[in-house]
Each structure stands twice: as structure tokens, then as C-alpha cells.
Length: 116
Image (cartoon, rainbow, N blue to C red; front, side):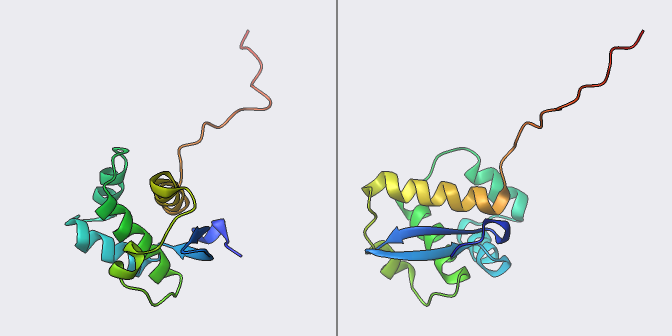
């Protein structure tokens, strides 16, 4: 079972439930693949909301390998997703969100009293 606190997600690929995790090694792999100088540059690249099929293969592959699966990008490219292209995008978005976090608005349950 995936542990979101460790950046893990679960996804169905190739008819099988799999765990994905972008470990430090997986992130270094993505930095090299995308020519990013650092993690901030990598996060910025994905922050645009645009992703190619080639990007999805690389991110999903790195996530599978980060979780311990021995799989090449060529093998990842042949895995079917339950929801076709939308399914791949959902996996990438969920994995990146689990890795880099999301901006959440914090609500104050007890606001300070007005100043007199």
C-alpha cells in the first residue's frame, strides 16, 4: 500500500496495481532527462501544466523505478492505463503532487479578536 507521507502513490498500469515514488535518485534521473539544473527547475517545468507523452513515460518510469520496479522506459511506454491518455496524465499529476506537495490555503479556525 502506498504511503503519501513518503511521496508514494498507487496506480493501475498494465492491468496491475503498482506503487510509484520519486526518490532522490528518481528525481536526479528526471533532472538529467529534462536538462534541469536543480529540483526547483524541475518543479518549475512541471508547474506549467503541460506534459507530453514522452514526459509522462519518463516520469512514470522514474516513479516505478523509484519504488523498486525493474522497468525500462520502453516497457513503460507499452503499459496500458485504465483511462487512456487521461489516466497517464492523472498518474503524473498525482505523483508530482505527492513529491513536490501542493499549495494549500491554511484556514484559521480561531481568528484573532479585533484590535480596539
